[in-house]
Image (tube, rainbow, N blue to C red; front, side, top):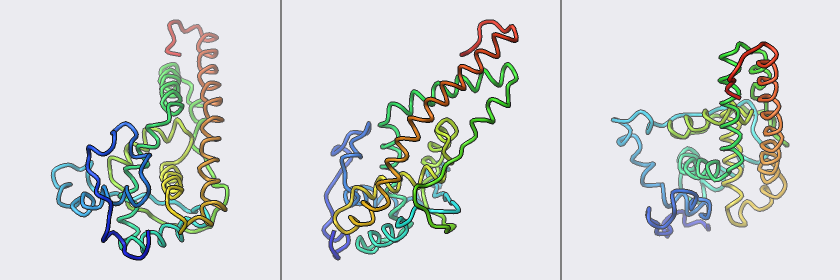
Amino acid sequence: MGEQGLTGKVSLGPSTFAEDGGLLDLSLLEVVSLFLDKEKRRHKDAKDDENQQEDVVGYRVVPTGLIMALDGNARRLGITRAMLTKCVSHQIVAWLDSLDRIKELVSLFNIASDAAEEYGYPDLYEDMTPNYSFSNSSPRSVTFRTIRWVKNKLYTVSQPLGIPVCALFIVGLCYSLTRVGNESKGTINKYLSFEVSKFYRCVDERAVRVCGFNDLVRRRAAEDGFENTKT
């Protein structure tokens, strides 16, 4: 990236990438270059659409090295951390959308949840409450800037994945930071890449739990004499 910030930023337009995942092929610098002007205009563009307004996510702890890597990359790009995380928000959503396992998991979870609600099994639903911890963390309460529609997107997958919205956003930041150059290499290799690997493992493990949740709802409904269950 160097110290020139975005003075020589990459020229990218909407036709440069595919909406269905092309963002994942972009480096952190390219993502910022693509969305910087849009994010600078966000306050103006959001007047008529609340989903385009800025929003925040916060958490009690963060992965070790995350703040240092964000601040370092923001400084080298010549922007604020808030601007960096807003730009990166677009790539985070593209990343989650690219994972078919998540789509399957969300669909099955919602089917099982609807059945649990209909037939009266809140205990089974509450056993699936989100709970997540980072591999390496620092006790530091912090908030990050994002966009309302991004936060709403995270809400739709948070409960099925068993990961709080704020933690999900933070893992997404870790993913995007793994796409920078040598400037953050040590921090990425020692800390941040482990958070991304843990996320993939947790998605696989959560899929097993969601299948179990679905089976329990179906079994209890059958025992209670319900027919044509939704599971």
